[in-house]
Image (cartoon, rainbow, N blue to C red; front, top):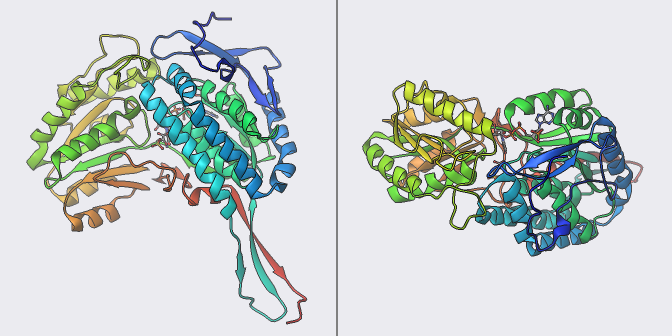
Length: 492
Ligand SMILES: NC(=O)C1=CN([C@@H]2O[C@H](COP(=O)(O)OP(=O)(O)OC[C@H]3O[C@@H](n4cnc5c(N)ncnc54)[C@H](OP(=O)(O)O)[C@@H]3O)[C@@H](O)[C@H]2O)C=CC1
Ligand SMILES: O=C(O)[C@H](O)CS(=O)(=O)O
């Protein structure tokens, strides 16, 4: 057993759970095995969680299945009231949830508090949407018959979530499912389980019945195999890399599960000559360096038209160099650590490759003097199209600038990727806004905006960035089945 660092200074220490929630009980792994969780800023162990295997995972699925009939039978309004209480409890405990998140994921406290509000907004949104899972009455095609279309919950779902948004990626999946009467098993990333477990504590306090939401931890191969292969699970919602998404899709195919896949990105950020330069710089900073560049919608390639390239590069580099790098709990810090050493190595690989191919560093370019997982916010200029950073998602604080001459060239470069999640462009030309927005092969497009994620709009990608949509009214359909009922013998 590794000696954890001092307990987190929480207002409510009971939110910090080193156990899994199954059927309303907080339990250990049958083997007693645990997995340590480290603070990415310090390397210290902040705690440990059970290492569930397939048997424990199966028990969690069975708990969700046992809770399903009664939860489904509740009125949508009754489920809504419980979700509304969970929303209010998340906001009331935002400081503790944020501190737990920063301690296990590293993001600055201000960003963590922002994520808690963002995560809670999905609970608030779907507490209402669940009451609007409308069916249809279709004009009959023959006398004596009525045609009904019913919307029904898909059943037991599994959610496998990443480390970069430890709260929002949980609630963006769980809230719609619970709202329509599904029950589920959540398996958060091994690096960031405590935020999810704290949400589990609040869900109990909100009145969520035992077994409706189960939260498990354990090696991904074993827990994932059971969640994707067990026929009692009718739906898998996954957020993470495209590589893992493809593995999970294959595993789910054997029992023909419904799936929602929010996968990798490679977002182009296009700046046209006619853009508001300061707005474009602000948008690029927000999009690129959010969560230290560790979001799937971060600008990954910044395409700048020749006429303003140098001016944009200079302004962006000044803004990047002004950021404060350090532990997320330190006042004024705007860039936390990367999640682990592998992430630092990937950033260094992308920078080294670009420089070897002729790019130049405008600011940053190396590990931060604070050491560990800290890295200097970096701007590279004149990066060639052949560089790895053009085709691969960096998932770190590196802004590579690529030149282009014409609108057509910008669109071609932007679409030259198997990914299609988010894209951004800055222009003041209305015609160009529509031409480019319609030509970009992406599920999410920001025009003169660098941060566009919200619970009210559909989030999801084209091509190898995923399947399905989360948030908005569209997010509810991911947890509903459509049943056509033909009623005959009515006479008229
Ligand atoms: N589209 C989106 O919204 C997002 C996409 N991503 C993409 O993911 C990558 C980085 O995030 P990262 O979390 O490392 O992504 P991963 O895909 O490695 O991990 C995501 C989750 O999947 C789990 N997992 C990994 N392998 C398996 C498996 N074989 N069976 C079951 N579960 C598995 C992980 O568990 P474990 O805890 O053991 O690692 C984690 O909980 C980037 O490419 C990024 O673009 C990330 C976040 C959001
Ligand atoms: O996992 C992610 O990167 C998130 O989906 C991005 S966002 O929804 O928080 O913008």
